[in-house]
Image (cartoon, rainbow, N blue to C red):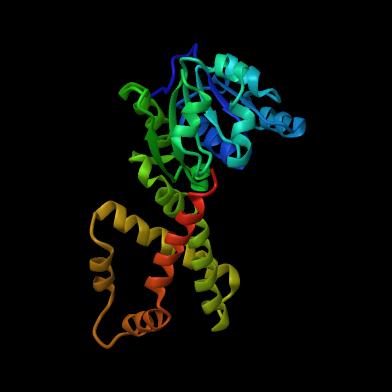
Length: 272
């Protein structure tokens, strides 16, 4: 599969941590050749490093990338989005093109206001795209065609999984998918701490906790079985698992995790 014809280019405006993660994953998947990617970063040393590592065309001029590309992936911070997109020169460079923004909290209404003649998609990927295990939610503007949406979904599917959602749910997507890896990293670290406290080596504890989380997540995804049912399959009467679950419930783990998503979504809604 190729995302774009060989003569067409993906422009990445703002190729920091997330932008590079997506670029690396797309190149690894083979869905785009290095010559089809033109990325820019305001820091010259970062642009040079990107070119050296990935063999892609790079620069420091956002407008040059916008003019040269066929599809633009905008990976700047929410507070930078207006400075990058809200100019007549940028509107002209991106006119009629598909523009995908990953700026958290920046709504389609605002993006379309900056780029009234572009097809605009709002996306929220996560850092796991760097290893091809990302999760992205995408919402489209009214001027975006099914074909353009399919292209955007395929772009993020090349670095994990992707699905279309209504924009009203994008702050929730930001909380559970975008910020979610950080919450899981804390859980893995905490589980490892418990094992270390009991005498297990730190490296072994982290390795076991991480693999356990990966395996449990894959069971949910691959079997399609509700997590509560899978939990019951591990929990035998009078056993050690039910004892541990009791401690989690004493700590109100369900409420804490649910409130974590609620608060993260609330703050995400203010970022734009």
